[in-house]
Image: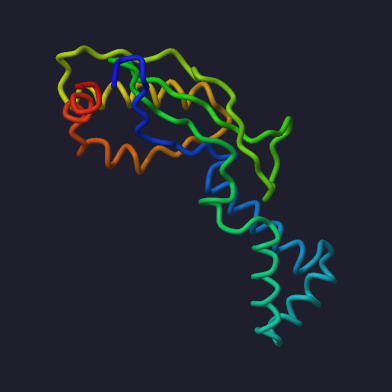
Length: 175
């Protein structure tokens, strides 16, 4: 390989909203759908579901799925694909093909840009820790650029400190 060929090493998910906010909104939705808005209707429906536990469980499950299921995989609206190009950390952005991003289960991801933010540079002599810190700086800048969206890089940040970045780059770029 040569230095003009990117070395892709991670796809970081971008979410419509943060996990806590999603589950809070889902609980509010389920509450309104199950029990209604007026106090009289709420009291009657709560009494019904207390007597009919199976119906409550079935309907809650149905509403959770109808709202959108678990946040982890269903609220992703894009990905930042990280790669090295020589001694630069870069990222490409893939996002859903929508003008207005709302809760949805039908997604088509399209390439949006080959440069989310300016690349982060490290030297030929950088240590594994310095290379990883360059990646973290790039991720931090990208998170700022993508606000109000939420980029979840926690898993990558945990694993990245254990990767032998120097060896990875040497193996990829050495003919």
